[in-house]
Image 1 (cartoon, each protein chain N blue to C red):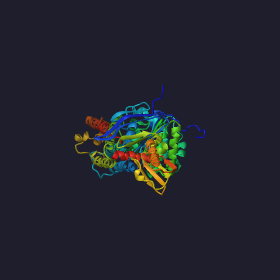
Image 2: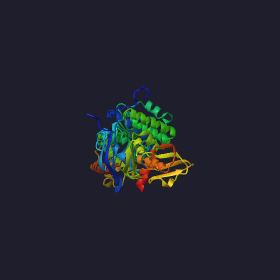
Image 3: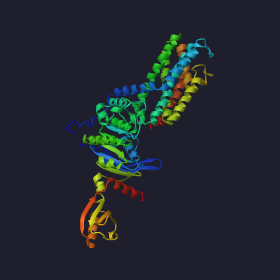
Image 4: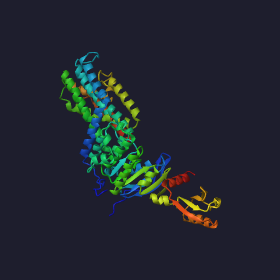
Length: 303
Length: 254
């Protein structure tokens, strides 16, 4: 018997009254994988996560976490899930140390608190009441609370929001470590570099709809090459470039080509050089970043 | 990972329920005792009322036994202040801060949140009652012990009632509004709940209103050694039922 996937979401919809917050989203997360829900604020990321966490009932479609219904079987799932809320969750007068000890006491085999203090750099504010912690310190504590019970699935809602670069780096390292330990991680972010750096799978959401999904490599490779720099004879007629491609000569003899640079597009550029009788002395390609893909997709959606 | 044991290898599991509840209840008790308002509303006001009414004759009482009147009164006030006012204010803010949400999604579970809150409230009420009774006895109060069991039952019933209304406020209104409403109710009942002076109509309407039903019943049992009036029981049970049903129906965790 093979273990069920960590999370299966199929055709999920979430409504708030008449407003559709999530509309037909599907994805699957395996153990030992990191999935990033990427989208602008208000895209529906938190709604999806809250359904998976069992806080909210799915309006339509099916959601399974570790083979169970997160809403109906919530009490059975809670020890197996680690939840980091987008903000808050801790009483303002309680210290990090008290909170960690409390959450450790809920678990059958809790992590050593010292390990978390070390990994998340909590030592400097362990005995400070929550209300006096900075945003980044609160985030780190919230993450430690999500992990202390040694869960199988971890939900991180915008884990690095409000963190300084050092805190963010530490968090990223920790997410890598979770993956290598076989933990499934579902995180939301609107930071493209975070998704690109961390995720095995990126699911791009906007206005509740799934726009694209796949590994960062697959997504950035989707439309072929990002841009092409061509070194050739100066003074070629850039206006004669085939449809779908835009070229600019700057400085003389260097052409920057952008547009639909899939295999056919690349062939068309070289055909153009051949037709113009140009001598090509250099060709450099740059792959697209997740940012290019994301902006393209969300712009298309808005149009 | 330089050959280390995989530190975060999953090993989920819930600690024994009693362990979980003990830790959560201990934290809840500490949080109640640490609050500044707790000291004022739950300790200083009842003590001041006890000393003021018990030792001076500023307030005219229908009976000779001033302590016999006021000690049961302030016990009732202590129950209300902790189960209702303190509980409502604290839970309201916890709901606003997402504390209830995070705890409800942890291995504690939502039911555990409610059990721990109830246990903490009962523990704090026990401390308050012990303090007020000690002061009363030191001043010369001599309670009747023959009706101790019904007196305790009244306190438990009233705790459930005030608790449910505290949670109902906290689970439906914004935190600021909850705090305002809970304090207002405290002040109104402090004056009209039969704490420091008799309520007009105590044998009719007053007998079924929550705080006066409790203070009336405690006076009957502890001071006069007789069973509480049926109306006291009926009042507490009916109003309590409304509170519990309302809370189950309308309480929102976030």
